[in-house]
Image (tube, rainbow, N blue to C red; front, side):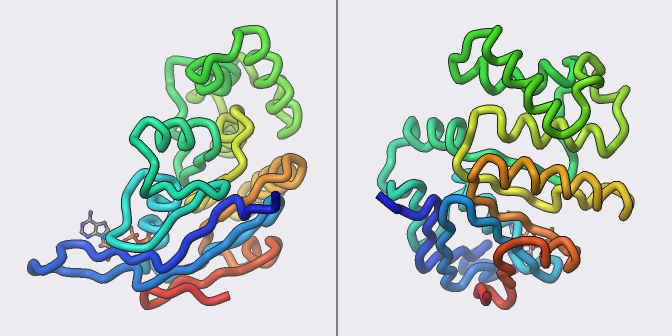
Length: 226
Ligand SMILES: Nc1ncnc2c1ncn2[C@@H]1O[C@H](COP(=O)(O)OP(=O)(O)OP(=O)(O)O)[C@@H](O)[C@H]1O
């Protein structure tokens, strides 16, 4: 079957509906992402990029419209199913790494795998492989505070991919880095994504980075344009 990995139809979201400060952020979003497809999400600040990523990642619910992951309608799924899909099928990367400070790089990458029932040895081997693929295997035993910003973000990429998700959602994944580091770290991310056949939706303000993806989606005034 060739189901899209992510399919969104008629998505709407308004904050503070009927109250002062009402904002209609999403006004009918349609989006379909196939396996291996990498799309940039560009939007002016406040246009609703994080809102869209949170809904696609099942961290928030829309007022109306559908989110399908792997052909499964998430509005109809139980809380348990949604949690399982979020844990196994979706990887998240944020602007800040959100690594756990008291654990080493390799442990941070092992944790989501252990939480999903992987054996320790298997989780560790996978973590080392991922660190190798982003060029920082030699930093495996360091805690986040002993890593550079670019290294921390590479570890966060590995963690996001640890459970072999089919969908990657990233919110300004290199937005916190200086331009030269951002460029290198972004290249590492793209290699990781391309090597894994993931569908990815990557929000960025950087048009040079956006141009390196397969599609550029622009979110403005509550609608998405290609
Ligand atoms: N929980 C909330 N309650 C009320 N308004 C909200 C809430 N979350 C977001 N908003 C508003 O909705 C709009 C979109 O927010 P969102 O965070 O999705 O934007 P964004 O495109 O990610 O912005 P940025 O690029 O600046 O991070 C903004 O006007 C924001 O103030």
